[in-house]
Image (cartoon, rainbow, N blue to C red; front, side, top):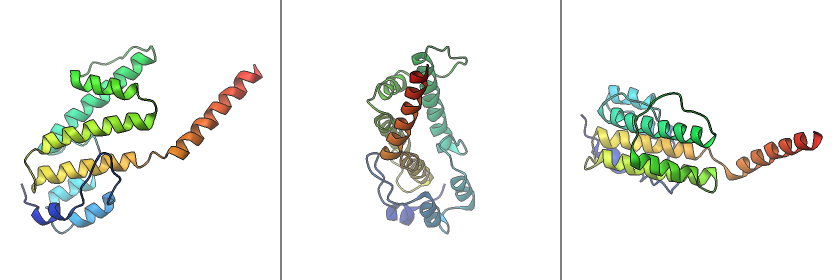
Length: 173
């Protein structure tokens, strides 16, 4: 377990309701000469479902539970059966239910992002300058990176296009 005092102190704060202050690539560049080779390789390959190492194993279990609950509730909402069993947690189910009843997909993503950030903060706990803090920061950055892909205008344009196509099919019947 390394100590990353200067690295962690020099990184900008990440907030669930904020934007990405740095890219993941810039983050990796900051880590390059400071982080151990093993940790750097894990960071380079990091996805939201990564499970390598103690911190990511804990995060991965939570993320698997969250995505399982999302799949389950979406299946129920569509009137389909859910074919596989999954680990269930009441608080996760409640947050997913809130997200799925949000006004729009972006609001749903923000509800989930807030919950994921809260969970990451619990996992990191009092760790401020070690590998737990480093990996917690990296996962948060990946989550913000994912959220930055949502663009309201593009989403509305895609929705309008799909809706127009459906209307044309209905009118042609």
